[in-house]
Every structure is written in structure tokens, then in C-alpha cells.
Amino acid sequence: MVVENVGNREPGTGNREPGTGNREPGTGNREPGTGNREPWHTIQPLRHVLIVVRSPAALDRLEDIAPLLLRDRRLEVWFTIAPGSRFSGGLSKRLSDAGALLLSWENVDQRRFDLIVAASENSDFARLRGPIVLLPHGAGYHRHSPHDRQWPSGLSKTALIQNDHVLPTTIVVADADQLDVMRSVDPRLPAHALVAGDPCLDRLRASRPHRELHRRAYQADGRHLVLLCSTWGPNSLYGHRPDFAERLVTHLPADEYRVVLTLHPNIWELHGPLQVNAWLRPAVTAGLVVVPPTRDWRPALLAADLVVSDHGSLTFYAAALGLPTLIAADGADEVVAHSPMADLIARLPRLTDADRTEIARALRAPDATPHRPPTLDVLIGHLYSLLGLPDDSDAPVPPAVPVPDTEVPAPPHFQIKVIAARRHGDSAEITLERTTARWRADGSFLTAAEHCADLALLERAGAIYAEHPHARADTAAARARNLRETFPGARVALVSIDETRVAVAVDNGTSVARTTAPVSATAAALHWWSTIPLPERPTTIHVRAGTVTGVVTTDADPMA
Image (cartoon, rainbow, N blue to C red):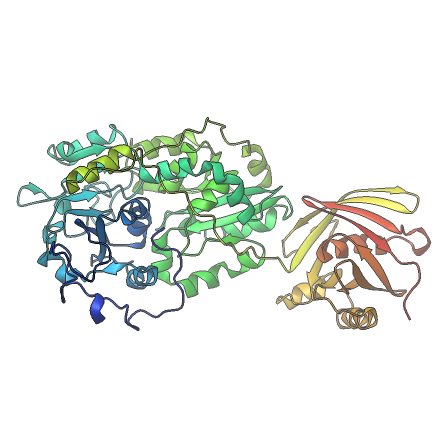
């Protein structure tokens, strides 16, 4: 990965800011393309490469190729940011924090490069000196450009052809079917095409053996991971149905599903992470995992059991990986008619609402295709041909998608429904279904953690629990009694003593229970227990809620 973490550095500060300090090309002898062998170079580059970044989405695609060039000691790889995009605000900081060599756009026309790689045709190629390779910006030419609907996005004729000259040396396409689209824009374009597959899809396929590692990162063991994917714009999933993620995460059983949302970088850049995170906070509180704007979406797709998407490229990648995919927004007239994406959307089933029945029906095992590691030999071979260097790798394999360090929120409340309860003398077995809905449905009750920020939920909760250990049983018991006094609507209050004991406050006093279940599930089990007449209450409760299981044992002797 070229960019993995934004960190806390402000753009425009420190010595790594492009245009300041000794790292600026065009000063001293560090200029790319000079060809001089400098005595202070530990590694002497034979060729100079420029990677042109115009937007976060373009950088995302360039990351599929950049590591293969960066690791070659014969190459010195520079990055530059092409101006003109409304979504490029954070690129300088991201590249600087990643440690990239940055060349200011004002200086790109001062030197010739041996290879120039870009992923957006709107990069003012006329300023660049050297062979230009244009990588795919998405999964084909399936979307109308918001600037000029005459051409598909990625094939703007005015950007690709100037003064009757095709500017890119090579335009990489995934398959030969895209040549017809290029020909419809200008008959000269197919002569510059290289059919080399999709580097992004190749990288996803190469990383499939790590699927279980990615699932573990999302704490999805034993759960179905549902990935919501939204491109940008008013016809996207998030633009058309902004409350959909919250509705889904609060309707699906929390112990059976993990719901993850990835948004197109343009959403984050245009609206700002502060506001987008504020919009998503209720859903995150309910358990939604949001892929941050500086993190890769690929791990979530590799971990997914089901994808709910729109007309963005991730729909194509999900289908290509054999994942069951539902369409929640079809892009309306943004999709190019009769394009492969239009045909795919027409074939895929629709998800009209956050309906768990439709979700469960769509779930199936991903297609178990034999693992054949894809290679990038066509594309990499072409790049090295332009560089005039032999490709030293036997068969360049795409870099594996790194396993992320993911934050999975723990919901501070649950709506509980007892699905089944069986009694065997002093023992009982109960099966619970827990969602993170904020309303109380018929036959259900609410449980809430003491730190729950929604005070209305705490007032309505039938059981309140404190997960922070109190170490001493007497202080935990006092806290449990205090919680019941503070929230008299609760039948039960639980306070953790240690990993296996909780203090329990009910109407008839306070006692200690032993448990192997999480405190939140223990609270639900003891709420059910408290509804049973005192002489008939079991002393042992086997509780199951999806992937959560445990045994709760009550103490017959109340605490003083």
C-alpha cells in the first residue's frame, strides 16, 4: 500500500510539505530525470517514474500498481498531484505521511520522465513529458461523466485528444469489449489500448486465500458479514437512501450479522469526515462498522458474505468474486445504457427495504472457484518495455491486500426477544435474539449499558448493566442497587465484579451470579430469570444468542 494511515500531521506544516525543504525536485541534484550518478545516492536509479494522482479514488487505483514499481531498486518513483479536482484536498498530506517523493505540479513540465502512470484522464497530460500509461479509474466505462455527458467517465475525448493528438501512450483496459466503447469516442483510441485485465480485480482475487484473516479483523467469525457499498452522488446508495445503513444494522440480529459500510472517497472529501461521521454516528452506535476514508475497502469486500450496493464499481467486483449481491440504488440515468454495468444491475435482485428475510434469502456461500493466483505480467511487461528495462520478476503477482486493524463498535443497548426457553428442574436453556433497535417491540425488552448516551433508552430499559469491573463484590452490589434506584423502570441491574462474577440487584435484594457469557447477554438472561416467580427460578441458565453462548449460575444467598 502506498497510503495506509493519515496520522495527525497537518498539511502545510513540517519539513515534508511539498514545495519546501530539500525534498523538492528541481533544487540541487535530486531532480528526477537528470540521469546523474550522485555520490550521496545509496542506490543509483536507472530510470525515473512519475505517478500522477488527481483524487483519492485515483490514488486508490494507483496503489494496485505502485508497490510493484517502488520495490524495484532501479527506479526512482515520484508522485505529483494534478490540480482541478474538487476532491483532492487531503492528497498532499496522505502522500507526505506515506513518505512519498513529491513533485509540485508547477515543475512537472521541467523534466522528462521515463514512465508516467495516471488513473484519471483529467490530469492535463499535455504538461507531462514522457510516455503516459492511463490505468482504469473503475470497473469499465459504465458511468456518464458529471462534467460532460457526451462521453463515458474515464474517456473524455477533450482530455485524451488535443491538437489532433492522442496524449496517452497507452490506455489500459480490462477486456476487449471495452475497445468498442473507446472506438465510439474516437476511432484512434483503440490503437493505444492495452488489454491487460483489471489490476484491482486481480489483486482481490490474489488475496482470497486471506479471506478468513480479513473476516477475523472484522470480528465476523460465526457471523454473516453484510457489506454496504456506496458510490458518490445523489443517485448512489447513500445519496438516495442515507438512513439505509442505520435501518439495516438495527433490524438484523446483532449476534448473527456484522454490517460494514464503505463510502466513495468523494463523499468524505466533499462533505468532510467531521460531518459524515456525525451523520453516521447513530448507526455506528448501533454497531455499524464504517471503513474510514483513509483505509482500504478491499478487506471488507474480501470478508463479505453478502454485498448491498449501487452502480459503483464495487458492485462489479463483488459479482466477479462470486459474492451474492443486491442492488439498493441503480444509479438512474447516470449509468451508460447497454454497458456491462447496466446489464449487471438489470440481472441482480433488488433490496427494497432493510428486510432481514430478503437478506437471509440472498445469503449463500461465495462461489468456490479454484484459486489461481492472477499475475500482472501483461501490464508490468508493458511498463518495463516503456522503461527500456528487463522485468526481473518471473510472473509479477499483485501485492496481497493487507489485513486491517479494524475498530468494531460495541453497541451500548440491545432489544431482546426470547425465542425459546426450556426448563429442566433447576436448570434452563434460553435462546435470545438481540438487535440494536431503539424501540421496544411486542414481546421484547430493552437492555442498556450504564454508559449509554441515550438517556431515554436507559429510562425504558428493563435491565441495566455496568461492564467495568469493581473488583470487590460489596462495592459492585452497592452500585447495582444504586442503578436500580436511579432507573426504577429496570427489573434488573448488573455490575461486573470480575471476569466471571456479577452483582445482581432485583426486587428481593442483591446477590452474586457467576457467568461465562458477556455481561450484556448475562443481563438479558437474568431479566428473563427475574420474571419467573421466586420459588421457581432456576439456578443455572444456559444462554445462547447467535454466536454468543454462556452459562449463568445464580447465588441462592442474597448479599447483605
